[in-house]
Length: 511
Ligand SMILES: Cc1cc2nc3c(=O)[nH]c(=O)nc-3n(C[C@H](O)[C@H](O)[C@H](O)COP(=O)(O)OP(=O)(O)OC[C@H]3O[C@@H](n4cnc5c(N)ncnc54)[C@H](O)[C@@H]3O)c2cc1C
Image (cartoon, rainbow, N blue to C red):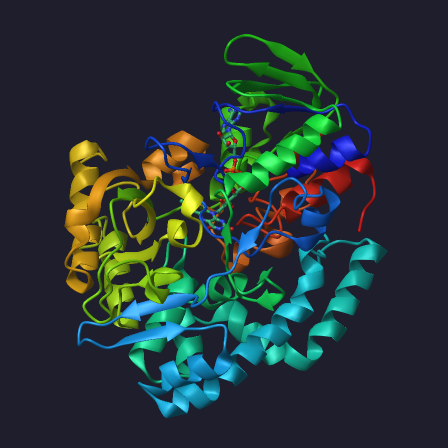
């Protein structure tokens, strides 16, 4: 949608083709339960680039980011809890309940990430410089980058190479704090907190800014679909056309040049330029006839890793969880932000160990958000939309079972049990729920392996290597075919940057 917006803004004739009956991909609001507005997949925002909000006038089109204060709540089995507030003094007091040393260090930890994020930020809206390229522009950009990164190069190397756990343990000793931070290192990753490279995933989550504050995530009023609906509105205003229920079956190619696309229902459209926001496996292996994919390209695409253990469970409830550690009769501060249920890094690691062996986690890692507490328009009066981002469930199970309704319900029960340990009323307030396993995410949104970032975010699949060296510049070996989704630099999340950069490449304005 972002690529379409920039192309339409430049006066190009744009056609957006969407397989589903709603446009917006994994960033949508859907009425999956009557009277509810559910952010079916993506549920919080921080990464969306301010340039994109501005260029498409998204605020005038209804986009509003809602603050979550406190931003997180961790209820503990021993009756205590920890919260993170916008007010640094209050957060200091919360951390000091478990370690005064950690409380005193927290501001320095945040400052370190903030400094590195500020250095990296210019990379988000520019193609990643390629050290193997012979272009003077690339070499110049690399030199500039090296100079810019120099003061923080030790931290940068740590963030790119260390595990989230090792990075966090350089700073902190108390388990509730370490566990809460480590979850950011495994969000959407096929990895545990002790897997090398996960410190980068943690860092990726502090790259954005909500309300001008780095690393802060907010809810979008009306659900995440407000963002993509605003983009669609812009595209239509610029005379672009958006067709839903329009599944592309084939990207048409003649003499290694794109000529258009053919839909599953037989309609076809001619175009000199086609942008695909599907990942490279979907684009090259599903939508292009094999004769147009060279052996080298096929090998590159085969090697892109898209594993995932993510399950999204959307729940309709008739109340809010009542936590033993902070009881309440209704919504309170503990319900506003992200609620964490794991208490230690080892617990997260054990959950991943299960999945690595092909088993759904016995004690899954659950991240709960209740956006309707902050935005009551999302659910009928007295009801709530509870979003559960749960890890890990392997795409392919070692027990040979498939992810049918029974298997999904069984996994949901494990996640619900984790919640009920801390909020005993949980099972009583659940009215209905929908479970999206990695297989469902692949089927519903076209994400290979259910990988929410269209490709794992590990060092070998980042920057000039995203998704592979041969596809790192939005262009592809097929003339007129471009990649514009999360699979390309700077990667996943509701950010818009890949779409901006792909459109720029099409328009010939290289950064
Ligand atoms: C469960 C989940 C939770 C997430 N949570 C967050 C979050 O809270 N915050 C955040 O910033 N990011 C989050 N993400 C990541 C974010 O949603 C994605 O990175 C982002 O949506 C990717 O955008 P995209 O345009 O690249 O592709 P997508 O959003 O994946 O869109 C691809 C679109 O292509 C369509 N399509 C597929 N095949 C065809 C075809 N053959 N023809 C036509 N159309 C087709 C699909 O229906 C889909 O609409 C989450 C993702 C998931 C799955």
